[in-house]
Length: 182
Image 1 (cartoon, one colour):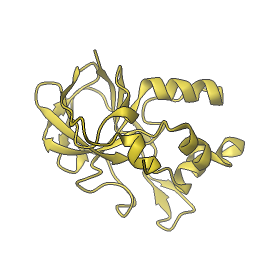
Image 2: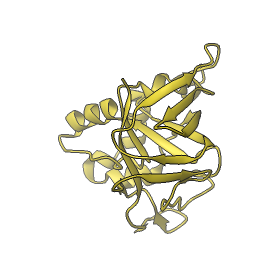
Image 3: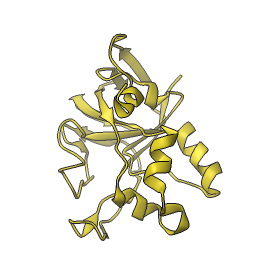
């Protein structure tokens, strides 16, 4: 059964060479229950709202299985939040989620899948070193992108909460199909 491994929010803003001068990609797990409002996890920040955040990108989810793949590829541990995600989930193929799919986490929170993450230069700089060169292409080609979600019903969630897919529009494209333009 799919479940929530961690809820993550910004640990600290970091200097970045991009146009904003800072990035909020450094996310870390929060302790205990975390409130999730219309604009995302309480205490989280999106430094560049042009490309991240807002109502349609309020929450970013990434699968533990995809993170494990990248741990093997990169030869290092990638703790929850490393991908800039707000939710690390397990037991659910996030990239096969359909746009419009509704997830319920815990007793109350409802999220709607809206689109795939588009990897960017900030993400490549975050990866850093020799791994950062060519990262955007490598991450894109692998198709382990994760999904953005809109908050349909606010609530509090915590690591260990069950994630239920309560609605799945079978005729809608998957996150990966949208990214690849299929």
